[in-house]
Image 1 (tube, rainbow over the protein chains, first blue to last red):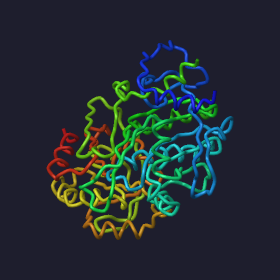
Image 2 (cartoon, one colour):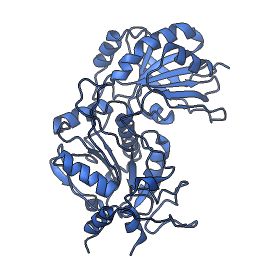
Image 3 (cartoon, each protein chain N blue to C red):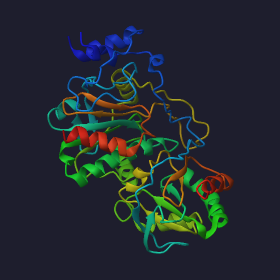
Image 4 (cartoon, rainbow over the protein chains, first blue to last red):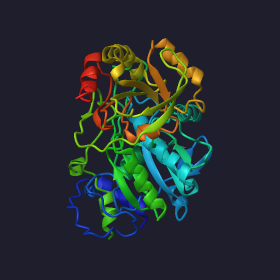
Length: 225
Length: 181
C-alpha cells in the first residue's frame, strides 16, 4: 500500500486515539538524536522518530521540483512554513532560525550536506520575485544552492499538503487590522529537523521562539553524525 | 504496522497536549521572560553604522561592566517603525549609564545596502547607536523571536528582560531598569 495514500485515509478517518509509548533511553530507529525532553509523539504534526511522508513542490526560484526523498543519503534538512505577508514578526522569526542554521552550516563547511525548505502557504502572492526579495530582506543566502522556497501550485494544494503531511490546519480569515492585507493565516510555527534517511529528528512546534542555538546544535549533531 | 505511521496520521488537535502552539494571527504585545540565574551572554562585536546619533565603528554586546539595551529591528518591519518614537524617549530617559543600541539582523552591505538602513533610520528619527548583525549571530545568542525584540542585559552580561512586540517608553524603561539593579 502506498504510504501516502495510507496516511491520507488515516487522517480522513478522524479519531485515532493512541497513547504515546515510552521509547526508553535509546533513540528511535533511524535517528541520531536521543528522544526530546518533551514527548510530542501524540501531536498532529510529524515528530521524533516519524518517517516524513514524501511530497513534491516547485522551487520557483531554482525552477525545479523539490522532494525530500531526493535528499536521501545526501542532505539533512530543516523545514518550516511561512508567508511573506505575515502580519507580525513570527514568520521572520521562523525564517531567522533556518537562516542561522544555514549560516552555521556554511561557516562549518557542511552546507552541501544540508537543505533548508521554507514552504509558503500563500502561493498566490509569494511569487518567485517576491520570494527572492524576501530572501534579501531576511538575510537568506540563495547562492549556496541549499535553500529552497517551496511554492505549491495553488493555495488549496498547499493547504491540503500542510494538513495531510504536516498536521497544520490553515485557513484564510479576514484581517481587519491590516489594511493592505486580504487575509491572514493562523498556523503553528512549526520547524522540523529531518535527517538524510527521511526520519524526523526534532519537531519544534514553538518554532518562532525555540532557542536558536539549540536548533543550530541539533542540526549540526545530526548532520555531522 | 509501524507505529510511527499511525502517529503521523493522528488528526486530532486535542491530542497535541502541552506542545506550546503559536499562531501568527494572534501574537501581539509581548512575551516576556526574566532570568535571574541566566548564564552571561558571550560578547559579540558588531559593526556600527554612520547615521544620526551613530558613528561608524564597532560595538561589543553586551558591554563590559555596564548594562546594555538592544532593540532588534529590520527596515522591512512595520511594527519596528511604530516602535521608534518610544525607543527615542527611552534612550533619552535612561541616559549614558546604559549602552543603548538598535541592531538590524539584515545583511547590511550585502543584500541590503547601508544607505537603505541610514535612510530608514533618518526617516524614523533614530538618534542613537545603530549596528548591523549581518550573520544574525547576536540575534541567535539573544534568541530573537518576533520583531521588534527588546533585550535588557545587566552589567554582568546576564539577560534580565526580553520581550517581543511594540512597547511604550514606560515599558521599555521598566524593562531596562530590571538590568540596573
